Image 1 (cartoon, one colour):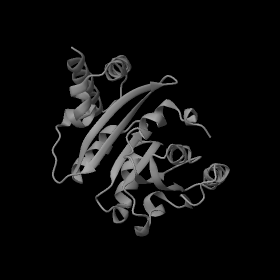
Image 2: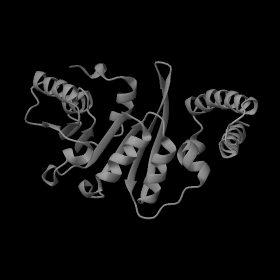
Image 3: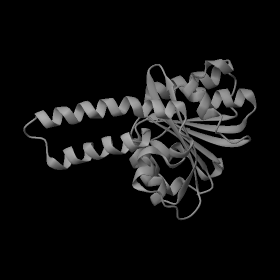
Image 4: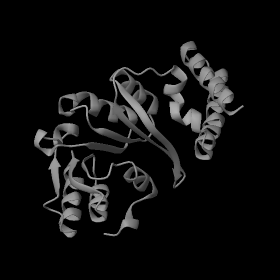
Amino acid sequence: MKQQTLSMRLARVAAQVPAGACLADIGSDHAYLPVALLLRGSITAAVAGEVALTPYQAALRTVRDNGLEQQVSVRLADGLAAIEPQDRISAISLCGMGGETIRDLLDSGQARLSGQERLILQPNGGEQPLRQWLMDNGYRILWEEVLRENRFDYEIIVAERSGPVSYSARELYFGPLQMQLRSPAFLAKWQRLLHLKQRTLERFSRAQAVPEEKVQDMARQVRWISELLA
């Protein structure tokens, strides 16, 4: 396996894994991320966790084909249940699933968290509820990034536990650091979403049975995005 086999999305996730880390890659699929990092010498050991049998077997093959059986432990487990105290995990990556799913895995797996780990999260949508969980559980967002690959917008959120932290409703919606950085990819994402949400609001206005609360929520989102882009 060569370094360039990582997608742009996973390459950007890899860039946020601390040097020398013991990584737990949850929902590892083919274990491409931990294997690439080990082949570069960027991390010292890894756990690749998978809940489904087919990707678990694919991860085993990737690890075996690269001769990394001593450094990567591939485990069939649900979420953070793949992590054991003796692993001394210092970074956890959860990529390629919905933000609500990542939130739920973190929440149900809190007993497996020491509080010292860096969380490197790449949600496919649902960023707002994920940021809400991070705030509610004392995690400060250290880095955020938007990237576009294969016509999809992806977000990467990096956080570490810091004690109490407070974000506004808009910061939870857009990302506190994203709002400051205002990268071209971030602005382009919200420009696209603005058009989609404006069309949805127009459909709501023509429909008969849309709850007023839903209409108001969509109108608020359109207003916030318009103000962000103004």
